[in-house]
Image 1 (spheres, rainbow, N blue to C red):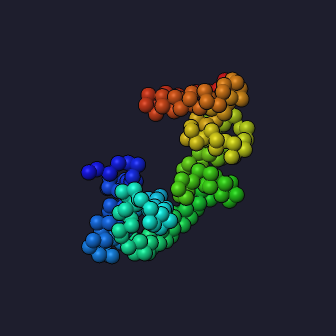
Image 2: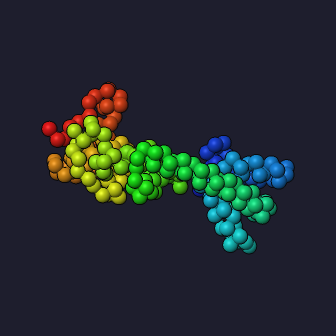
Image 3: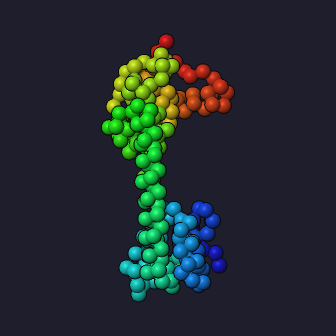
Length: 215
């Protein structure tokens, strides 16, 4: 019979549950199981670790079907493979993040500004120089394009406060547009973001001009 979603979690790369993949792999050997784990991303690994801990704490009690799979495999072997994979991902993340930071610094961004922006815009621990530059361009006029200064002014804003808008509006100009709709036109936070998102859609799909709240 099928396993329902409440009893398992899926590994997006294959569509099969991580538990089933490990169970089937261990029927062959450690090398096969390790190769399965080596293809998993960190959030899946963390779910596996959480489920293993749940199984260990509930020994002797009735287990859900997915937990029974974990109870039937050698969790020590799985834990070793997960530790190896997590260390590999950790090293890759360090190298990737260093590259993103150097990219920002190479564009003349102040080191402290770069640190704040990279941390705020990170996703699953991964930095993005592109998102960080958009954030800084919206927050601080020194990183703003001449076009955006002409259209949205040279006022500076607090980086963390700007991020609360930019996480919905993405680009520096749409973020500035939303901020000025609130400050100059008295739009609510939600309405300003909605209009900024529509402006971005219109520009990208219909090649319309950026809306101007200054003139």
